[in-house]
Length: 300
Image (cartoon, rainbow, N blue to C red; front, side, top):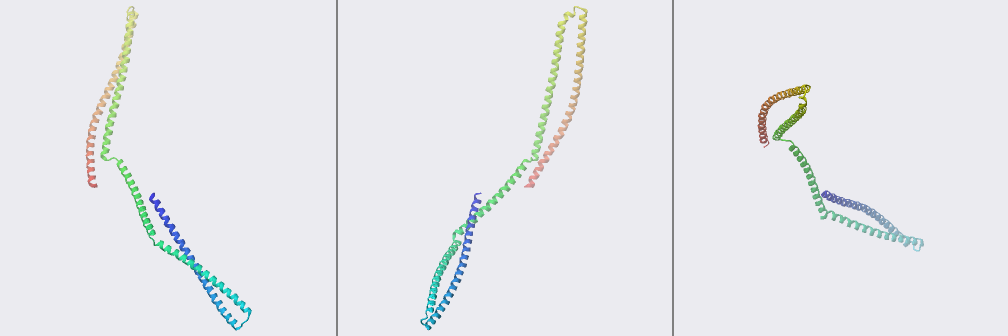
């Protein structure tokens, strides 16, 4: 920005100097025209003077021929006064023209001196230097813009993962998936254990309550036949409920065993599939490595 400001300042100064020179040239042309007009007027006055002198000479001859004629004398005086006034005007006009001519000639010489001086050459050299600096600055701007574009493309290329990085990402995602599955399975086992323990707790509480009830009612029930029958009925009801609960538990155990067998089969199939995928992945990695080597050789 500083270089551009300096260049503009120098260019403005040079334009002002050129305008000033052009204005002085116009003034010089105008003065030269005025000088030509004054010269034409001077020539006209000189011709008038010559005419008057010729007339005076003729009058002088007439005066010599007609001596004593007063009117002629008066006319001669008037003509003499006119001649003196014209001579005076001629002198002033000549002096003014010479003064203007000398002033204009001095200005012309000054302009020629300025146009041929070392200052103009120095300004021209500075202007050329500033122009070179401006061109270099513009080239630097274009180079910087291209460099920014190249860096942007390079960043975009760096953001794109290579085949080896993709393989690493895939392997890491697979490991994370396995860890998540293990954590999920472990969490399910925790929930299953908690539910089982909760059921055992409920059963123990019921069994304890039943035993406490039997213990509290046993002495009273054994004193009468009705009490013994009632106790036996309640015990049979408890036994029947326990058998039903045992049947449900056995059904649940069988269902879990069936699921376990299914999971074992799925696990075995998954192991086989994992081995196959591992072999395919290994072959793919080898091919990617070969491809990377070939690409490097091609680039080199």
